[in-house]
Amino acid sequence: SARIVGEVLGKYHPHGDAPVYEAMVRMAQDFSLRYVLIDGQGNFGSIDNDPPAAMRYTEARLAEIAGEMLGDIDKNTVALVSNFDDSLKEPAVLPAKLPNLLVNGSSGIAVGMATNIPPHNLGEVCDASAYLIDNPQATTDELMEFIQGPDFPTAAVILGKEGIKNAYATGQGKVVIRAKADVVSTKEGKSKLVITELPYQVNKAALVEKIAGLVKGRKIAGIAEVRDESDREGMRLIIELRKEAQPQQVLNNLYKLTSAIPLAVRDESPGIS
Image 1 (cartoon, helix red, strand yellow):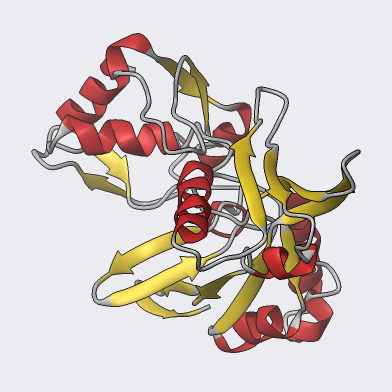
Image 2 (cartoon, helix red, strand yellow):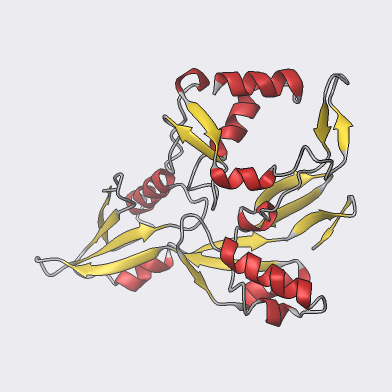
């Protein structure tokens, strides 16, 4: 990985090495991207916000799907511009067959405008794109026959479609995401919540700490214990409830709200897409 970072610094991005490595690490995290663009070997961090190993300890290569971002780049398919010292040419945009902006989403602030595009399922996006090519005047309702809504890498449950439709139609809307949790009865006659999926970008370790803090501060009643039983096989967060607790009341505290403002660069200027 260190060699890749050095190549990027020397040829295209003469700034700090840390941001370059952080960007590469994120492209290898299956909990950050719906479709990872980097095939990484070594410690590339975790959903608990554990830091990745230093770049000298990790290895990386392009994932197969990332090749669809670069295909035919040597056939003058896109405009080339000079790099920072005029020693090399680089593409102004990538000749991407993969609709990465839609399938992996984007979040950030640029030129004073915020963007928060959620990730989507590649198959659904391809079907909708093909339909839109044949039907340029297709409505939002028609396209939503193909794209049901966002498809997050951490899964979880999306509640309702109205916010999704508003986001697609107007560029502004709220998507309500809830953790996937099952209520399980114990032999002692109590109940426990088994959480196997969390909303996108929710830090599991921070959530456990927050719940513990709320219990300690007596702001949430009915929770006896919180423990993390996650392993390589997947996420498993256990919330043991007291005998008198109502499981649904505890679940309501896991609801998370996220806003989505689909803003993309169109004709070289920001605009709702």
